Each structure stands twice: as C-alpha cells, then as structure tokens.
Amino acid sequence: TVPSLASPVKDTDYTVTGLVGSEALTTVTMKYQKDGADVTPAAAGEYDIVVEAMADADKYTVSTVNAKLTISEKTEQTGFAFTSSATATYGQPLQLEATGGAGSGNVAYAITSGSDVADLAENGTLTFKKSGTVEVKATKAADETYAEATATQTITVGKATVTVTATAKAI
Image (cartoon, one colour):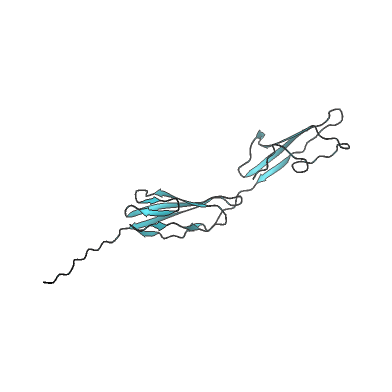
C-alpha cells in the first residue's frame, strides 16, 4: 500500500535539521510526482516524493531534498492450474478446482466459451445443458506480493448413456 502524504508526519515522512531550539517549520507539504506531474502511485515504477517547506523567512533559508518511492513488480504466481477433470457427462455436475500459485488471493471461475453447453454457479459448479465442449477460466486474485494468475481448461462433455431393456415375458 502506498503511504499517504496528505498529512506528512515529522520523523516518519520527513526529517528536519538546522532549526534553532524548539522552532518549527511553518508548513510542510509532500506529494508524489512522475515526470513532473502530480500522480497517485499505483503501477510498478519509480516516483518522486516532492517536499515543499516554509519557515520564518527572516531567520531561515529552506532547502528541500526530494526522495524516491519505488514500487516493485509483483511476483508471478507459478504452478496455478486446474486440478478438476477435463471430461464430464451430461446430467452429472462437475465441481471446478484450480490450485497452486503462491498468493493468498481468492479463485473465481468464468465460462469463456461454450455457455450454450454449461451453466456456472458462483461456487464453481458446472451444470451441463448438453454434450459438447466448454472452456473455463480460473483467476486467482492478486495480493500485496503476487500478481494475478489465470489458468484455462477445455472440458469435453459426453452424452449420457440411456439403456432401454425389454422386459422378458413368459406365456
């Protein structure tokens, strides 16, 4: 989480040297900038932390030293994949399951093609409307350290087997 600079705190957000006794700066403001423009940092990259300060002009010349905020790229989550079956049968629901990855984000599922073949419940259960193929995508949400991870799986839905047996007769 990017620290807020709305109300900068001495000795936490900035330090001051050169004041005499218990005298204080009259104002201190801080903001983030990228390429000279004020921004709210979110994406990975380097941002300037710009400080502006004022003190009693009859006593002090104020100089400021800016700093940098570096936001690192989030680490890729490896090994995130479907563990549920890639085959199913009409009339038998299939519970989707994707596991792996290192982050703590929740997993959500979506049908990316084949919505005419299956419906997807919020809990990740597929209910089949007919035979065919359905492609599903699992997304593991990003967290503070790890980037979002996705996996896709194509599920082949077979027809249910119907058996009709004649009843034996005796005369």
